[in-house]
Length: 111
Image (cartoon, rainbow, N blue to C red; front, side, top):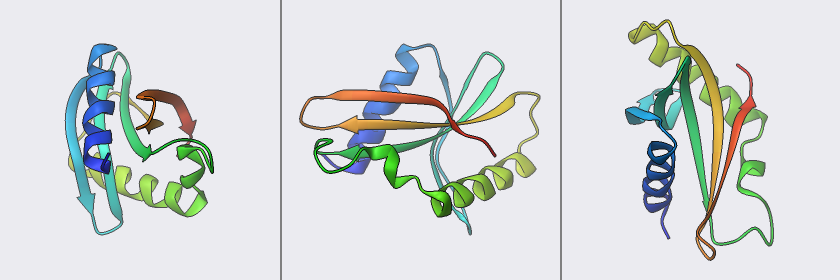
């Protein structure tokens, strides 16, 4: 399973949970945000990590301090271009190809 396929599955999961797609693959010079969705009072910046399985490491472990900084800067760029009253939130979504399991970590870190 490719990263794109994992992102598609993550988006389908989020939409089934009532989230609405705002934008996918938003890029700035600082980095990329895989999925931006809204749900209730939140504008969610979601990082998707697709893995074959969790034998060696969980997907969320790849979202280290450096990656979090890049996501925060990229989200700041998005918010500078798109004013919103929604509360920003950072989620991580792990997609495991072998089992099809999706683990949604809500509020994985703060900006």
